[in-house]
Image (cartoon, rainbow, N blue to C red; front, top):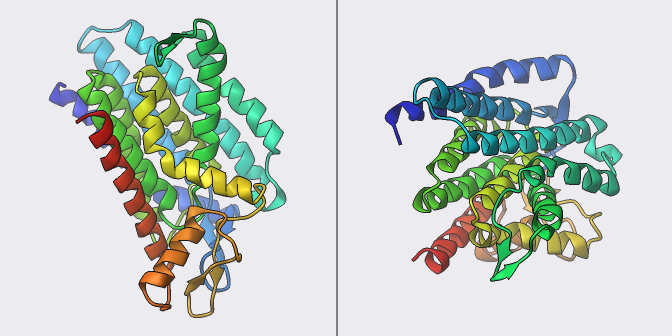
Length: 331
């Protein structure tokens, strides 16, 4: 890759990093603030929907990439059509996410049926260009691939990425890990342009993480989790790396299973004690977050468990899955 193209990564990072303080200030002015659920007293003082700036930084970086390709390298064509399709999917997912944020998760947000229908529409840009290869595990799917496999992939990745959430830095951190892994995979497979697209989001997420890590000054909202999930699906489909991408998604698959155990009604938040320590909110485990609290209690012999420790353990699990994925599929 030409060093010039690395500029787009810095643009995505600094666009998000420099804009986020203004968003936090404005969000508080208009009362777009949410409760920090895993803190004593659940203070309502954290700016919401910061994912809007993440998406903005990502899109600006990708558009600059297209501009450099077009005007400097005199190159355009099929790759640009794929890039615009990816941008369209991410933007549609983001719009659904911001609507869900504005409706408010504590008031129910969008209904499950509405989310499913809208996310299926978000997959249309990839469907109309027939992205990816229609052969899976030696079976030729033909039209079934764009009509069924692509929308299911986008729907699955977008909605389940939103499940493993609710703790300072968790969503952004895991997004950085998964997309960084996909950056390496697409680079190895020869789709270096996809690596750059991935890195634009990684850069934007890194800038966001500075403000979202414990103690968070801003929350991502569904706008970011939907956008990141949609991008992961797009990279997997366009890069024809569905197998390893699904493997990287194992934590989210497990989270979905546990959420279904609670009929999608049990939240991931912990029971917060006055001293800031966290306990299991239910007798049973309804999320990897609950499992992390349970394991940390055992490891620390009953001592206090804190929010950032839960996040670090879940990041560690995601890193382990990524290492196993590289070992199984690439080595």
